[in-house]
Amino acid sequence: MNNFPEIPFRRLRLGMVGGGSGAFIGAVHRLAARMDDQYELVAGAFSADPQKSRAAGVELRLDPARCYDDFASMAKAEAARADGIDVVSIVTPNHMHKAPILAFLAAGIHVICDKPLALSFEDGLEIEAAIRASGCIFALTHNYSATPMVRQAREMVAAGEIGEVRLVQVEYPQQWLCMPLEVTGHKQASWRTDPARSGPGGCIGDIGTHAYQLADFVTQVPLLEISAELSTFMPDRRLDDNVQVMLRYQNGARGMIWTSQVAVGHENGLRMRVYGSKGALHWVQADPNYLQFSKLGMPSITLTRGGDGSGAAAGRVTRIPSGHPEGYLEAFANIYTEVARAIVARKRALPCPADVLFPDIKDGVKGLAFIEAAIASSKENAAWVKPRRV
Image (cartoon, rainbow, N blue to C red; front, side, top):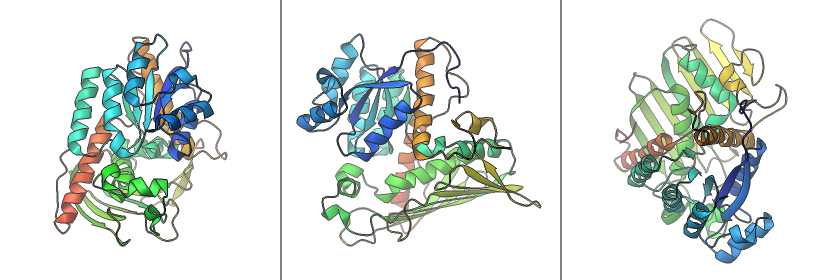
């Protein structure tokens, strides 16, 4: 993969909000940012606790002067430096997305944020307006859409290789909340099941948005309306832990999404099926280097990342030859590198390369509209609801 064929640019200076000691997703983002050697982490506000933030900075071997007590002072100080950060990565719980996003946009600093975008659709609209006003680049880390064979699926659907899209099915079952981990002090379970920190949706916001974004990304067919049932199976849990959604698309296609965090036996069972008038595609996240292609009247074939039949869209985000597995971390890295290409083009006063592709504010606002509509539908006994942004 050669994402920077032009004159080399220095590494982009990266800051991070959240992602301190013991934070799984913070480590993921740091690894992803370094994988293609386009970023250097130089600053951060790694915890709401100033002492923990500074300690995390020491662990990461950063200049103590650039380990900040809070995101607001970080945004102000970094914007004032000649060598200030080019972009910030926000890897906090959901309730701490909006304020840092707005602070760094106001400081003229590009933003990469974990999903979902914020707590409400209205918050999303406010962030969208701030991005337009700032002129900054904004990316949302729906990492699965950066997997090479998901890009392959999107390219094949767009080329009409499966005909008109008729059916879309995405399922994403996990088992990790089958027990009440939130009452044991488990950090990830604690905030994900807390409406104040996670927002009004539990499973629907955490992995339901991944499933919806994946279907939307691959098919590119506008959604019309949804019917949803959100369930909470664990006693005394305050948010949903199982989600079933039916979808109607504007072209007449139908879809189904099932996401669960109480499905015994599933670790991270994300899979996608897209059926058209002439063929079908099937992708499984646990085996992401392969895409099954079934053409009407022909035997099914398996396309491999980097192998025969794999097209340009997959090839451009492929690092190593077929047979050597790529997966979760590389998908995150693809987003970081795509964003780096956009930022470097901006700094050189050049047009953004036409093939740059990463989830952005549109995906974020559409995801919040999906959560809002699913919750509203479930409260009305699975009534059909039109999301406010489709």
